[in-house]
Amino acid sequence: GAVVSQHPSWVICKSGTSVKIECRSLDFQATTMFWYRQFPKQSLMLMATSNEGSKATYEQGVEKDKFLINHASLTLSTLTVTSAHPEDSSFYICSANRDGKEQPQHFGDGTRLSIL
Amino acid sequence: AQSVAQPEDQVNVAEGNPLTVKCTYSVSGNPYLFWYVQYPNRGLQFLLKYITGDNLVKGSYGFEAEFNKSQTSFHLKKPSALVSDSALYFCAVRDMGRDDKIIFGKGTRLHILP
Image (cartoon, rainbow over all chains, first blue to last red; front, side, top):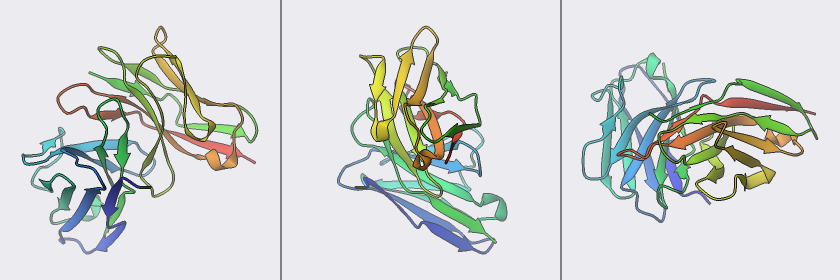
């Protein structure tokens, strides 16, 4: 079964709205989670590394104030797209590592965000 | 810096034929290599990995991959393709730096023709 749960699956909202996406690790604690963005027919772009109890590490070119990440517990990381605009429309995916660096990451099912 | 390259945007294979999806990597130390598959509007599913040991690794759904150190390749293979194998495939390497993040190739779309 799924080991990482992502919610919601789909979001459609008006421009200017802030949208929160949740990523939960099921039955395990994740000190680190990752947030990706995927454009149509393109690869996953790592946006940031979410660190429990500390600030997220953002990749170059990703706006920290635009994409707020909170990792307040060992099983939950949230990504908030603030004041979303149509260009923020994308597929957002989170992942977590359950069993150490030699093991694969576990991915959520993604969130399709559409800003009107 | 670690990187992976998937030279093919798309691969078309007739059902029942063998398939190969190519991947080459560049790492500074021992590579931790992975293959993932993505179906439409879904997250990624793990197929197989190479950490150490036998160069031929077997994974889910009948897939396998061969680690070739001299050619720095980790091609994904399957002896007999199924239509249900049609999906987007990603090769990945783990960056053994501070955050152990995964670096993905651009992906290869596999079309299995009935």
